[in-house]
Amino acid sequence: MDSPSSQNSRIPPEIVSIVIKALEHDKDTLKNCSLTCTVWRTLCLPTLFQTLTILGDKGYMDAFRRFMIIAPHLRTHVRSATLHISDRDSLEDDYVFGSSRWLDDEHTESLVSSFPNILNADCFHYPLDSLSSAFSQMPITNLRLQQYTASPTEFLRVLAAGSKTLRSVTLDYIQCYNSSNTPPATQSVPKTTMSALEELNVTFCTNLPFEPETIQMPRLRALFVSDDSDVMFSECLPDALNTLAVDVYDYEQPPSSKTLLVENFCLLSPGYWDCLPAVRDTIKRYSVPSSIQHIEVVLHQDPLYEQPEPGDLETFEEFLLDLHETGLFRKLTITMKGDSHPQAYADKFPTLRLLGLFETRVGLSSVLYPRSAEIYGH
Image (tube, rainbow, N blue to C red; front, side):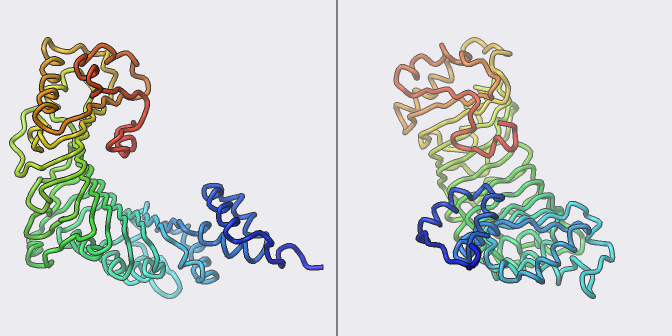
């Protein structure tokens, strides 16, 4: 009598696929399902191996080496890869993989290229030159770069490699520098047009070479920029965005180099009552206010700890009512962290509330910028 593992499933494959989809985040159960029969195994493998973490730590490499040699057929299933070198000394040590030093440029490029169907890549310390060479051969759509200090040329080459396919780019803690023997990026890298890019996240970055001479983002629809990033709103950006998220500046700032037509404006604030004048000033600094339909203010402290200055609430409400009458404005959302007092804004903005233009949210992620929870804690 045949064992269950050798028999074909009597359940239609489309039903099995629904079951597998429901178990996508339950890897242990999914592994057991893959042992049921050959049909189930074939259907389970793409889900089991759609994500892969490739670390650069020495202790990880023996296990990864076995995976690469024993199961090459699994490489095509990988859609999302985390490429992290948590030990930066791994790049310098004479660690041997086969007969060659591991994690030099050639091996890094070969490693990443061996997974031809990667769509999502999260990269931390992996050499940028090797990544750009590999990405030019892959259909990558979502890229996150973390903790890099690089020349503008190295940085731009990665973006150029995915310029036709990248739809979302997240940059965390990227610092670009210019050395005396490094030619300007405009001379060493042709101008790149990110023709597929729709979303850009920039957090704690400095000296990014986002200038019209080096890069263009004609289809960008969403831009998120943290307070500590010095991204200039230059001509490399389109004239209009669906969503813009920025930190509220509570100190005087010079005018932006470019003002944008924005439909949805998310403002991340420390959460004091006196942020409201700064919210208004930040809106005017970056955008044409009459184009805004939805404004969300995300507060990171309980507003009950501070009381508003006389007239601040009224002035801010008048500003929004004027936008409602003369522009496209139709909603203000105040999003507060979970331990905020739910009645903090209960009696505020009475006219906006009467017109159905105001709502409060407590303990929920941002409507317009959900990633703020990752950066600021909610």
